[in-house]
Image 1 (spheres, helix red, strand yellow):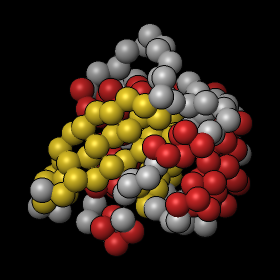
Image 2 (image 1 turned 135 degrees about the horizontal axis):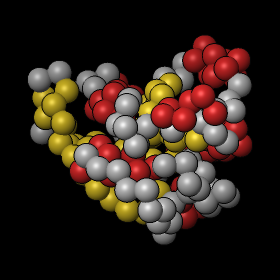
Image 3 (image 1 turned 45 degrees about the vertical axis):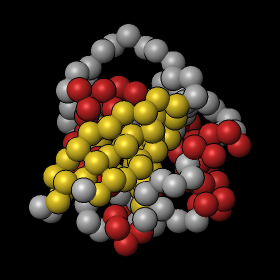
Image 4 (image 1 turned 180 degrees about the vertical axis):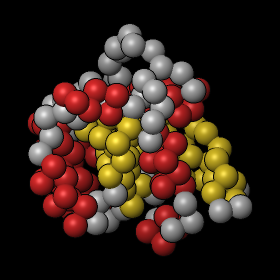
Length: 167
Protein backbone atom coordinates (compact mmCIF):
# COMPACT_ATOMS: atom_id res chain seq x y z
CA UNK A 1 0.00 0.00 0.00
CA UNK A 2 1.18 3.49 -0.83
CA UNK A 3 0.94 6.18 1.84
CA UNK A 4 0.74 9.83 0.96
CA UNK A 5 0.84 12.82 3.30
CA UNK A 6 -1.50 15.56 2.07
CA UNK A 7 -1.59 18.97 3.78
CA UNK A 8 -4.69 21.15 3.68
CA UNK A 9 -3.81 24.83 3.56
CA UNK A 10 -5.67 28.12 3.38
CA UNK A 11 -6.94 31.05 5.39
CA UNK A 12 -9.15 30.66 8.45
CA UNK A 13 -12.78 29.57 8.02
CA UNK A 14 -12.54 28.49 4.38
CA UNK A 15 -13.78 24.98 5.16
CA UNK A 16 -10.62 22.85 5.38
CA UNK A 17 -11.84 20.87 8.38
CA UNK A 18 -15.32 20.53 6.88
CA UNK A 19 -13.85 19.14 3.64
CA UNK A 20 -11.84 16.56 5.61
CA UNK A 21 -14.90 15.57 7.65
CA UNK A 22 -16.95 15.19 4.45
CA UNK A 23 -14.22 13.12 2.75
CA UNK A 24 -13.25 10.91 5.70
CA UNK A 25 -16.55 10.53 7.57
CA UNK A 26 -19.15 11.51 4.96
CA UNK A 27 -20.71 14.15 7.20
CA UNK A 28 -21.10 17.90 7.40
CA UNK A 29 -21.34 19.81 10.65
CA UNK A 30 -22.18 23.51 10.48
CA UNK A 31 -20.63 24.22 13.89
CA UNK A 32 -17.41 26.15 13.36
CA UNK A 33 -14.47 24.88 15.37
CA UNK A 34 -11.11 26.53 14.90
CA UNK A 35 -8.28 24.10 14.23
CA UNK A 36 -5.39 24.68 16.60
CA UNK A 37 -2.06 23.51 15.18
CA UNK A 38 -2.80 20.44 13.09
CA UNK A 39 -5.42 17.69 13.07
CA UNK A 40 -4.53 14.45 11.34
CA UNK A 41 -7.04 12.08 9.72
CA UNK A 42 -6.64 9.29 7.23
CA UNK A 43 -8.60 7.51 4.59
CA UNK A 44 -7.65 4.68 2.27
CA UNK A 45 -8.81 5.07 -1.32
CA UNK A 46 -8.32 3.04 -4.46
CA UNK A 47 -6.55 4.78 -7.29
CA UNK A 48 -5.79 3.05 -10.56
CA UNK A 49 -6.04 -0.40 -8.98
CA UNK A 50 -3.82 0.42 -5.98
CA UNK A 51 -4.73 1.18 -2.41
CA UNK A 52 -3.49 4.60 -1.35
CA UNK A 53 -3.48 5.60 2.31
CA UNK A 54 -4.02 9.36 2.45
CA UNK A 55 -2.72 10.92 5.66
CA UNK A 56 -4.55 14.26 5.81
CA UNK A 57 -2.94 17.08 7.77
CA UNK A 58 -5.56 19.74 8.41
CA UNK A 59 -3.35 22.70 9.29
CA UNK A 60 -4.75 25.68 11.18
CA UNK A 61 -5.72 28.50 8.88
CA UNK A 62 -4.00 31.49 10.31
CA UNK A 63 -3.88 34.52 8.12
CA UNK A 64 -0.15 34.77 8.68
CA UNK A 65 1.57 31.56 7.64
CA UNK A 66 4.19 30.92 10.32
CA UNK A 67 7.45 28.99 10.36
CA UNK A 68 5.76 26.43 12.63
CA UNK A 69 3.16 25.75 9.97
CA UNK A 70 5.88 25.49 7.32
CA UNK A 71 7.49 22.68 9.35
CA UNK A 72 4.21 20.72 9.09
CA UNK A 73 4.68 20.61 5.31
CA UNK A 74 7.90 18.61 5.41
CA UNK A 75 7.44 15.18 3.88
CA UNK A 76 4.17 16.09 2.17
CA UNK A 77 3.44 14.47 -1.18
CA UNK A 78 0.96 17.19 -2.00
CA UNK A 79 -1.21 20.06 -0.87
CA UNK A 80 -4.91 20.71 -1.03
CA UNK A 81 -5.27 24.47 -0.98
CA UNK A 82 -8.71 25.74 0.00
CA UNK A 83 -10.23 29.12 -0.82
CA UNK A 84 -13.71 30.40 0.02
CA UNK A 85 -15.65 31.45 -3.07
CA UNK A 86 -17.36 34.15 -1.02
CA UNK A 87 -14.11 35.80 0.11
CA UNK A 88 -11.62 36.83 -2.61
CA UNK A 89 -8.90 37.53 -0.04
CA UNK A 90 -8.73 33.80 0.71
CA UNK A 91 -7.67 33.10 -2.88
CA UNK A 92 -4.89 35.68 -2.59
CA UNK A 93 -3.80 33.97 0.65
CA UNK A 94 -3.64 30.57 -1.11
CA UNK A 95 -1.51 32.02 -3.90
CA UNK A 96 0.87 33.46 -1.30
CA UNK A 97 1.06 30.21 0.70
CA UNK A 98 1.75 28.18 -2.46
CA UNK A 99 4.60 30.51 -3.43
CA UNK A 100 6.14 30.41 0.05
CA UNK A 101 5.85 26.62 0.30
CA UNK A 102 7.40 26.16 -3.17
CA UNK A 103 10.29 28.50 -2.33
CA UNK A 104 10.96 26.80 1.02
CA UNK A 105 10.42 23.13 0.14
CA UNK A 106 10.42 22.87 -3.65
CA UNK A 107 7.56 21.97 -5.94
CA UNK A 108 4.83 19.59 -4.79
CA UNK A 109 1.71 18.37 -6.48
CA UNK A 110 -1.29 20.46 -5.43
CA UNK A 111 -4.89 21.21 -6.22
CA UNK A 112 -7.08 24.17 -5.35
CA UNK A 113 -10.53 23.54 -3.88
CA UNK A 114 -12.73 26.58 -4.22
CA UNK A 115 -15.19 25.80 -1.47
CA UNK A 116 -18.84 26.65 -0.92
CA UNK A 117 -20.00 25.91 -4.48
CA UNK A 118 -23.48 25.45 -2.99
CA UNK A 119 -23.40 29.27 -2.66
CA UNK A 120 -21.83 29.89 -6.08
CA UNK A 121 -24.47 32.47 -7.03
CA UNK A 122 -22.96 34.67 -4.30
CA UNK A 123 -19.29 34.04 -5.13
CA UNK A 124 -17.11 37.10 -5.45
CA UNK A 125 -14.11 35.56 -7.21
CA UNK A 126 -12.71 36.98 -10.43
CA UNK A 127 -13.14 34.36 -13.20
CA UNK A 128 -10.24 35.92 -15.13
CA UNK A 129 -7.95 35.31 -12.15
CA UNK A 130 -9.11 31.68 -11.95
CA UNK A 131 -8.44 31.25 -15.66
CA UNK A 132 -4.93 32.68 -15.20
CA UNK A 133 -4.28 30.11 -12.47
CA UNK A 134 -5.53 27.31 -14.75
CA UNK A 135 -3.16 28.49 -17.49
CA UNK A 136 -0.31 28.36 -14.95
CA UNK A 137 -1.11 24.68 -14.34
CA UNK A 138 -3.27 24.93 -11.24
CA UNK A 139 -5.95 22.22 -11.05
CA UNK A 140 -9.14 23.80 -9.70
CA UNK A 141 -12.06 21.98 -8.14
CA UNK A 142 -15.35 23.57 -7.14
CA UNK A 143 -16.26 21.93 -3.83
CA UNK A 144 -18.96 21.95 -1.20
CA UNK A 145 -18.41 20.37 2.19
CA UNK A 146 -22.17 20.77 2.70
CA UNK A 147 -23.29 18.75 -0.34
CA UNK A 148 -20.10 16.81 -0.98
CA UNK A 149 -19.84 18.12 -4.55
CA UNK A 150 -16.29 17.92 -5.92
CA UNK A 151 -14.75 16.82 -2.61
CA UNK A 152 -13.79 13.25 -3.56
CA UNK A 153 -12.55 14.41 -6.97
CA UNK A 154 -10.10 16.88 -5.39
CA UNK A 155 -8.67 14.28 -3.01
CA UNK A 156 -8.64 11.60 -5.73
CA UNK A 157 -6.50 13.85 -7.90
CA UNK A 158 -3.88 13.88 -5.15
CA UNK A 159 -4.13 10.10 -4.72
CA UNK A 160 -3.58 9.32 -8.41
CA UNK A 161 -0.47 7.51 -9.66
CA UNK A 162 0.64 10.71 -11.40
CA UNK A 163 1.34 12.08 -7.93
CA UNK A 164 4.25 9.63 -7.62
CA UNK A 165 6.19 11.59 -10.23
CA UNK A 166 5.96 14.75 -8.16
CA UNK A 167 6.38 13.30 -4.68
